Length: 180
Image 1 (cartoon, rainbow, N blue to C red):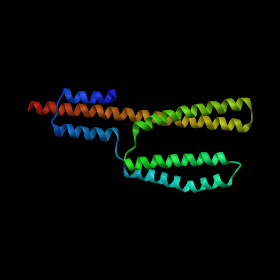
Image 2 (cartoon, one colour):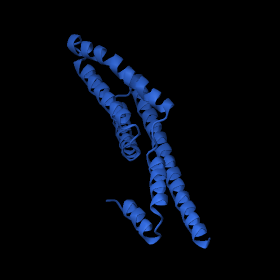
Image 3 (cartoon, rainbow, N blue to C red):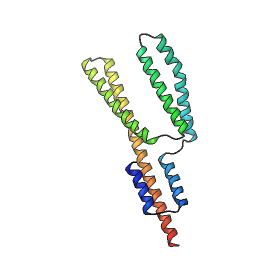
Image 4 (cartoon, rainbow, N blue to C red):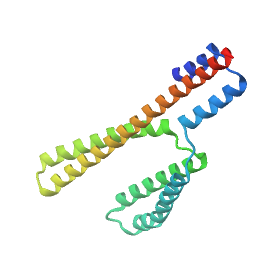
């Protein structure tokens, strides 16, 4: 169990709430930590899944027919299957696994930094217009991944603040109920 989970359970023990209040607190806290997918998000993921499923036959055909670029088609097929599996996991769960996605965004930022570095070093060794463009693409992907990582950190901070405000609200309600 993580320290945050232990802290949460210790807080329940320090200031005992009624079972009804405690259950409402846990439900509201669960909604803050991992909110259920809204209709718009569900549609977003369904469209993403449809895109992956549409791309799968093309990747399979490319893998079977295009012998010269077979590795590209194999990589494309693996990525499409991975994305489709991830989207199905989210849809079945009914909520985004935010902690896992936070770790994935950090890993993606690190991977794009590594890819951009490799492309820049390759471009320095083999100077040409195409290597400069590939280097710029690598830097652009790293910048995009970094913005996604910062956005996820902002969302995490917002959820933490909402969690703390919820705790204060329940403590105030408990104090108000005890003074009556």
